[in-house]
Image 1: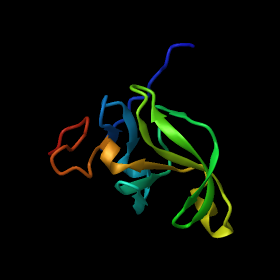
Image 2: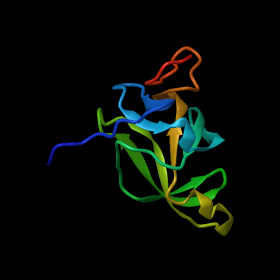
Image 3: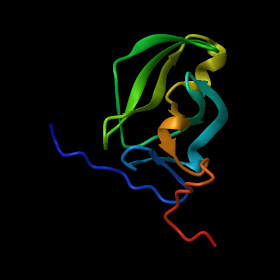
Image 4: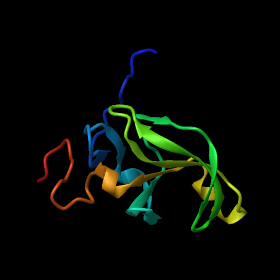
Length: 121
């Protein structure tokens, strides 16, 4: 196994709650209306510093999908899932997008834990 190179993001970022690895930015949010088994989740256009699990079919609120769980490369924590294939044509926009579960990440959605690399003027 080779060395893991991590991407450092700029701006308002979302990080792994356990190890603070950068995962995505507020500019990559596509939707804030997703739900997971433990509460709210956001749909992101792009997520970095992750590894993926095994493809599996999963029945969700909006239908059947082929998904992979996604894991933080910093600590190995499961942080959400990625849509590989939507079986319903109306849900195709989700393919290739990732869902991060809010209870597993920190970021601008946390009023007490704003994550930014710049000045908050």
